[in-house]
Length: 255
Image (tube, rainbow, N blue to C red; front, side, top):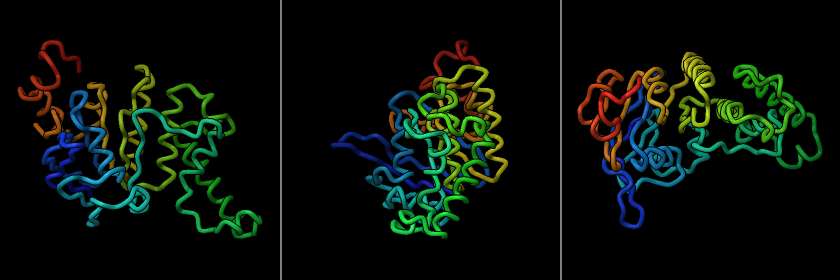
C-alpha cells in the first residue's frame, strides 16, 4: 500500500532523514521507533504532505504522493493524528468529528448558507456518520460536550474518531498513547486492533515499548535519520544494533 524509496529530508543543510526505504503492506500495523530526534515525526510529515522530501519518492496505492498537498493526500485515503492533540477545543465532540468529513462534502457555500434541501440532507448524513465513529470509540454519550473539557485520554480517542471520519485506508498515529495511563493504554491497544480489523492499514510511532511490541507485526527503527533495522518485534528486540542505539542496556528493557 505504501512504499518509500530512498527518502531524504534536509533542513538548511542539516539531514533529518537519509535514504529511508521501507514498505507497508495492506491491513497490517507497522511501527516506527527510535530515540528523540531520530526523524520519526519528520517522516510522518513528509508522508502526509506537510513538506516534500528533498530526495526520494513515496507511493501510496500506486500514486506518487511525494509532492502532493496534504489535502490531496487525504483525499486518496491517508489520515493522521499528532503528537499533541489538535482539536477544535471550543467545538463539541460531535462537531469535531463532523469536521473530519468536510472535504467529502459537495454542497456549495450558498446552498449551506440558505439551508437548501440538498445541504440539509448532506449535513444529516455527516452527523450520522460522525456518530458512528463516536460510537465505535465509546464517546457517543459525550457528543455534546466541549472538546477541551474532555480528559487527555478521551481527547486522544476523539482525534482518532475525527481521523476515521475521513474514511482513511491508511491511518498514521503519532505517539497515540502519550499521556495515557496503563489502563487507558490497554484500551487503546484494543481500539487499534479493531481499526485494523476494519481493513484499515496503520502506521504508528510510539515510545512506549510494551505497547508497540504488542500492537505491531512489523517495525522500522530509525537513528539519526537513518533506518538501522526492520523486522518483527522479536527480531528488533534481539538486534544488538537496536539495543545499542535505542533500547539501552538489555537487562534494563521492560517488555
